[in-house]
Length: 386
Image 1 (cartoon, one colour):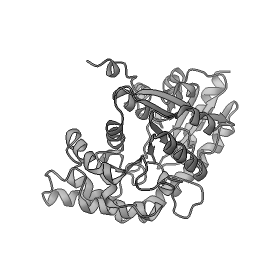
Image 2: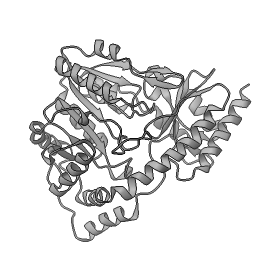
Image 3: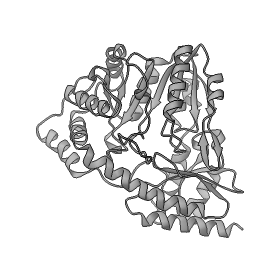
């Protein structure tokens, strides 16, 4: 067995969740998904597909009509994008892994901006890449990127830069000017950018398009840029496992071959559901974002009032990322919160060593009262520690 695989760190989020699963008294906010089910019309589209007998293989790159729909959706947000640059994947995780498989050889130098969802740092390691981290820096609970530090790390010979913005777990979002500067630097060094933009629609700042700044806004079609997306967050489809890639057109055919050797194709009935979702996105995504903003505005100010808690208002995503004075080992504390307070949140150490002592709270809750109950449990637990 490969040492790189054996040495992969197991998910600390799952470790905490396993400690509380099956307990009806635990308020769980550990996973990154809404507790709202997929809208009826999306589920009905999948049912109709199954009833029609669409249970066979599809094109490696996805149904042509779905690729066209994704291209039109992306073009509306970011300017013209051809369907020849789109590949449908079996989930956003699969999209990320395919991109890394396509780009990273054993021994390649890879830089990742962290803290970040642990899959993004594990995937280059799985391929034998040499991973280096550039950490965001906390300032008053918000996290900021030091561009000079990033540019020192991304040098000629760096194969890939991995960036997730809006960011899981911190809520940090790149500005347009930062994206331009990063893209120009990577052009000089010959470095590919892998941009995980799955949270781009879960953005709470005013924009003309309702999306966070994207590298697609500033890049040319032939830039060394791969952008990954998912239907999971913006369309309430986490369990459907469907995502997509936007890439240079020259990469699309090889990507189809790579998909063949990974999953062959995404299932047709899930793609039919995605077509229904994307056709009626204005009925789903704005409502989801508006509700998430209300959840954020309910949770974060209440956390900010707790003694010793440091947290900033995130501009994107679905997470509050905070720390509590005097509590350093976030995994140990997260397990104690499950056992002693019936509260399930994710430990910051799951996302990067530099996030030790921080905690991620997913506020995508259909019942906003649960958020208040969770804060009350945290407040009571903190009071008992004095």
